[in-house]
Length: 284
Image 1 (cartoon, helix red, strand yellow):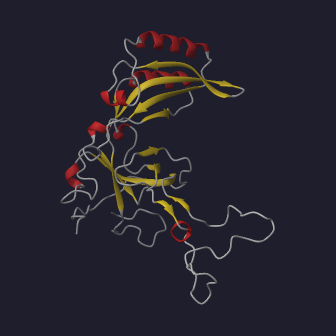
Image 2 (image 1 turned 135 degrees about the vertical axis):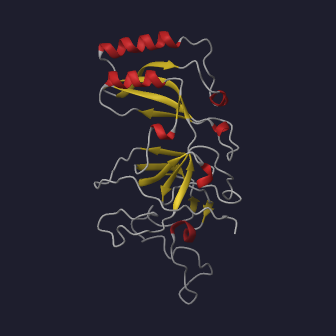
């Protein structure tokens, strides 16, 4: 790609950058939820579910039968007109059956906010997309900055060396046979072990969010990114995808959530100019 970072030593030159290919199938809009401000926080006051739900969501929850969507929307519209609604959100769900590389069958259900400050406009938009499928190109475009949230790769119970990166004890300095333990658990007083002392325990499998990742490409042309033999432990990308500069948390088959940046960069970033995408085999 062409380096478009201002004040960079290689600005305007062709550089090689690592990217992550994220397959982004469509998500379904299952319901609309209205909230009201109370002294104890936001409370749900109305819901409207779609009668047109994909079969994958039925493996996760019991879908409503003979549901009157129009009546629920009319009730919600009257509440919105009265001015009692402070927030409108939609309940979205994934469609795992549309992804070839994932053996998952149950859908993941999430609640997604709608940007904007006008509650009536947000309700009209939510009503427009209710029961439909939303793709990645409807939300993000090339050059956008996003936040990436996922559950990291889990390693189970690990010692303090791998978990916290402490230094191995030297043989001539060690007062005990073990070399992979912390040198001290702390002082005599206060008479307890501090949480700051690196010890063994669960390593990985935590929710982490990485900020300000740049989207380099949004496309559905899989021939541009599929390497010879497919991606290791995943296979071939079969639908819409994005290229994100750098790495993202989690293993190859785990759910990744994308959102608008909460701490955006101050400098404006335009659409990147890609010159070549390496599709050599990842299997050696």
